Length: 225
Image (tube, rainbow, N blue to C red; front, side):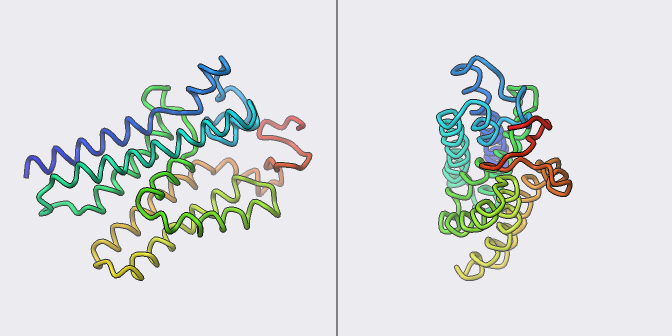
């Protein structure tokens, strides 16, 4: 029993510390000798990297954020393989890692607890847990992005759909009630965090001031693009 608790602690720690390795901040600091958080929306995610430093910076940021989400879940799955299984289920460990990885990205211990908004890290964890859901989430994202030009709206909508897709996936896959509940609640927590971090974007969307790619308007700081 003590070993099980130590493994849970190790999973939580590795996921948070991996999540705290903020790719956007590192790329902006060591490649562009700047801090992306001083520009645009103030976030350290792919969208702000794209707007501030360009496509190469955005691609490096996206790759790093997705990979750390994948790594956090894979390490958790490996560690949980050593547990007795009497107290904690495999899915509980996986979603613990996924949630802590996102929290690490939002509030990175290495960078003054100011990071990105967690979309790509969450996508990386989903890729490791339920890769079959990625195409559905991508479709939801694009359906919102293409007509509006708003990445934030696509991200918020995809996040909101994730718990429902997870519930459907669990039921259709024949998982037990306990696992379905853990998956759905874990997915809801992840979605809630991502949506909460987009609250300023939601306010700008309501006010008609949100940045739209490919369209003239005002950015998050009110300056012309």
